[in-house]
Image (cartoon, protein in one colour):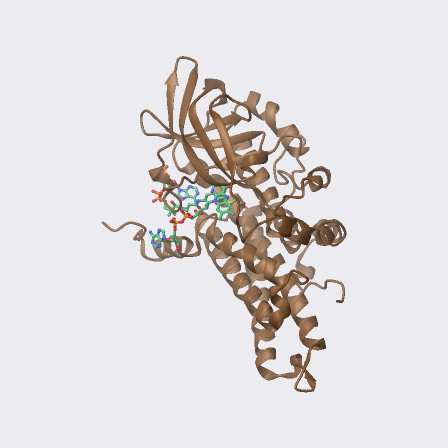
Length: 391
Ligand code: TGC
Ligand code: FAD
């Protein structure tokens, strides 16, 4: 198979700064050298490639957009390009970086006390402290406002009770950002260190998707944490949703990486696979699929780049992110399914990447707000009517 060539039909490269291209190329080379050769083994064995963490940290990918506390302070567009490249390797590796930076370091940076920032952020940027983000519960996924996890004040402590489900990095995390309702029914964020009495985790096994990522359940049974572990500067759902905006932004870029990897693989395959005496690439139905994919990748790239520019200039709103997350993941998923089809029977083995990317994107389409939840966010933007609930 020819080495990876990224599709750039509309010369997006010309719209990137030299620094952005340099960051993108550095991560691209890293993915080819360090991730692609090992990822199928991890996917097959259902393990997260922990040995990548120090290198990911060294390259400044953890909390990449944050300023100070030993973080890289990059632009959001650069961050998006990093996520695109990492997800070309595997959605699980991109997930790890998303969760660490956007879902764990961001809330400490944005909502934490100075003491909390100093305690956690430098270690997290170096990959020495791993975070996880607990919002979803077994019975509250799309509707996190219904959560039943509770935090009761007890002198200078809080007592946490409840559980969180489907938590990326849960079993490997040193600190969990846990969202819980206090006695006055207000959602607050808590930093729960690994090893705190009453806090246990259990990994989810048997996943067909994101196999190279740890997904866990978190349980809290009279888990006593010091009041100093409460994130002081945010209350209500806008706390976790503020983090999701950043993670969803990264996913909108990341999904393009999976799509570009599969498009390259399927195009090369189609050019060399002979059926009825000709390469299958010479048949119009196959070309129609390739044309569809190139078009959707190009549209997705333009959407992501403009979203990045808007985020960097402070114009990006949550509904802008919803459109890009919804569209780019949904189209990437369709593209990986088409690529799988072009590879015929070979597409169902892990000798090729398409099957793994396709399986991964099933999760990516569901987490961080399902495709339909983002459609409803846009529906609310257009009509002013929130259609999530039947009144
Ligand atoms: P709603 O009444 O609309 O809003 C409640 C408060 O939140 C504010 N808000 C936002 N703030 C910032 N960013 C956003 N995107 C926001 N959306 C809403 C809103 O202004 C309000 O503030 P205030 O001050 O008035 O209280 O809340 P709702 O419950 O009706 O929300 C509707 C809906 C469906 C959009 C929301 O619940 C939703 O987004 N659901 C999807 C849940 C979700 O995305 N979960 C993700 C879990 S984390 C995860 O999946 C990680 S995967 C990790 C990996 O990459 O591996
Ligand atoms: P549900 O909310 O039950 O949705 C099921 C279906 O119903 C979907 O098709 C949905 O679109 C539809 N639906 C729901 N409500 C409506 C409505 N009002 N109108 C129309 N359709 C609707 N969560 C975290 O907190 N932290 C993590 O780190 C994390 N990591 C994850 C990793 C993986 C691999 C996965 C798969 C999930 C992860 N999640 C995490 C959870 C994820 O955010 C939820 O799975 C997601 O929000 C959807 O919730 P649910 O699975 O309960 O589905």
